[in-house]
Image (cartoon, rainbow, N blue to C red; front, top):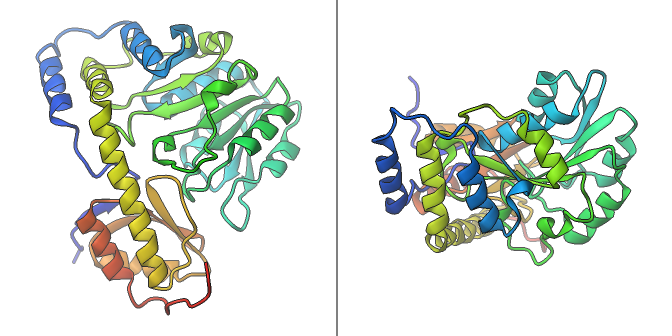
Length: 338
């Protein structure tokens, strides 16, 4: 008999539905569903630009951050070109590379789950058109610090576009989180990619955005699907930006639960490294395969990479307590310092 799913902790979704004010804005927009949205999302672009304190010609909007990433690849990748990225990473990147006919160049993560920046740099050549960094990283939650990012950007050839995926940046609290937007003037080959799917809890509405140099953004916009951002999504994003303080409080709650979940897992004997996204990463040699089975038996969907790791989205307190109960007893408590 199939075990019912009680908690969805596999896709790094927000545990919270849209705020009441956001739902009201969505409801009003639904009443106009017989009307087309803007041919190009100019109003939303201007709103996001003002919120990010950049000019509108630096902002490209798309169907989730993955949509903007695809627009970028279509804009800069040609036959015989390649796309480099750390692996493992967000599953969409090898798929996007295939969609544009690029050769994927996966570079293994370090044993500690970090993106190997030196190896990524060594993999770049005249055929490379895009190199992807996820910061914080998906799925391990590790961070590329401001100093490391600046050193990396200085060494990337200008014919290579750096796609800096910051889908989880709102959850990062480390003092060395890069201020990526401050780097744009120095690096016209940099595109900062963000989304309203994670921290803003609008995953089903598919709105992401990229911020870069005007020349790069213009090329990306040429690949934009007409009428591609629907009116309900636009209304939800604009209402979310007006409710930023309430949403920031929600993010703070997720961060607090992430840290509690990590502490409790450590006390149960799991070797959990500090992460900076809305998830916790359990890696081999811990018994992650057994852990995945225990979570499934408890009705919890988690992201299992057999033999590699287990990514647990931070849910609400009840979901996280269910995780802890399911994983208790699979490891002996550790006495060594961490």
